[in-house]
Image (tube, rainbow, N blue to C red; front, top):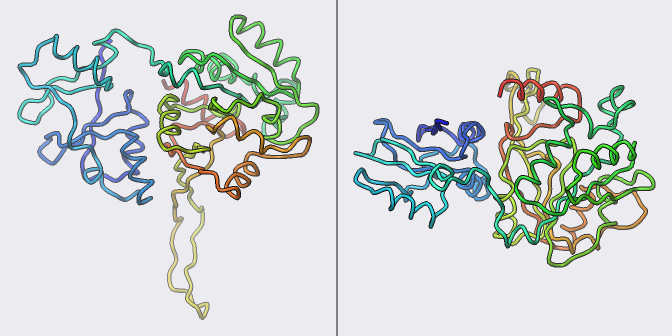
Length: 354
């Protein structure tokens, strides 16, 4: 298999960088100047750190890229290449001559390790909860027949994509919260994932998106990754977990930069209500919650029992109690919400084009 590498011009903005990174297989870009010389590398981590500091999407790539990047010179030996990859575990390293790319070496090819696993230490303390108890009213009339988690995407139910992904990266413990048409969901998963360790958390009645988590066993040492069953993310979950731990967050919200365009001409007026100018279909970039969260399991104690309680209520309560709630920003292109018809059809189209 021939792998490709991706480049980006140093003068492009972070908005462009997020789009480029979402399409880059290894989530790493080589930053080029006008002479096509490599001046640095750019990863989603570089972008994330910049946005947390300044929140300026117009910042140029050349200002934030890693200019102390790792590269090989032309006379490097194969044994040295193997040694460096084994030590650094970086996804790719270029071979440069006169600051130009001659070749790019990839970690999985060098080490013959095609599956990215979470580190043993991180994995040991991670559990996953898939929220699958909702009625899926935005998908009526389909959800009147089948529960939302079993809606097909690319030939298999959406919940398959989630659980397979977590099993592939080595997650050992998965919870699935169920309520609406729970017997259909349980029957399907028990047949489909016979060897997986899946525990079902059953709500007696709908109590919101967070209440069912209060039924989980509290473990101070564990981290819990929670995701809605209609949320498909194209991210490295190990990086999310590492970010959550390294930032010393109590709770981390995954949020996407989504471009929202007003489909009308917008009036800008002065204090006297006099029209100053008309802005045609303005756009803004907003961080929107995608329905995925990572937090310390011990926080479950703050979820009340037997009352309606959503994730936003949970987050607000933690903020009031002065817990550290952080944001893990991703590109809009790395998030697909299949919980409503327009996004569902868009997701199907995206899968077909891959």
